[in-house]
Length: 340
Image 1 (cartoon, rainbow, N blue to C red):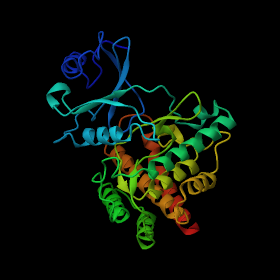
Image 2 (image 1 turned 90 degrees about the vertical axis):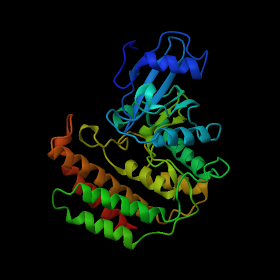
Image 3 (image 1 turned 135 degrees about the vertical axis):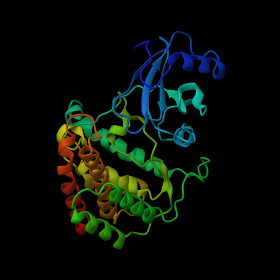
Image 4 (image 1 turned 90 degrees about the horizontal axis):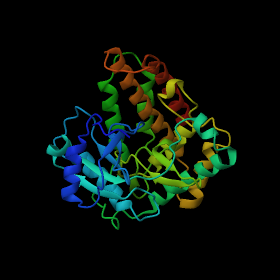
């Protein structure tokens, strides 16, 4: 672990701040490294040579008028700690941008493995792979069983009209990325709007619930659920639909949109839905709508990446091919909705 400052993290200023706010926590010179795989926020592994922690902050160059994003993540993780949903313990939230140039929070480091591809997951073998995916589904049930009010999260979102707002939001995202003809995407958007299901009672939503956003422990169970930046209150089946979509999706080029579906022992999506229904007692008869909506969201995200690629605003390998995935995702969404 490097003693030099990684991008976006001044170790000396961090040590000074922790010395003031958490005396005795740091017992040696700090070192840090960037943890790969995070989405919009930056994640670092920090150590004093004895203890390890994880620090999260907004991306570089991101102008944040308030500490809303970091405070929101910190709030939901803090609320969930000690519940049946495994999350790291939070240690500190800093909203003073003078310390690191952006708000940040510090949490405990949890030992575990993130599985992002079928190849990585295959190393577990079929039995452990199956058990891990069922544990993932049970963890989602546990999250949706929690009472937001009892956790102090009654005002964490606006659950009324959640699905309508989501459809509008992602439709606007699509409009902001339009650079070519994609006639079927409007067909999918309209079809989703015409078949909007009635939502069950709202729960805490993760917002991006899938295998590569959790850490698997050595015992084959979920050690920690990570990446809560999209969490809110809303329709619990939106989380399940996303999990189903990623469980259906085959491996795609360059891991731009990763899936573990091809690993031996991976349960069929229908079995994950059945497991969720059995343990939660929820009606999942409209799950195809939620899965189709997940395809629509992913298509919009991929089209946005393609649009930025055409403007020369993306850096990295494989972005030249993501545009070809968008029609496939749209077709999958329409097919899923029609099957429902």
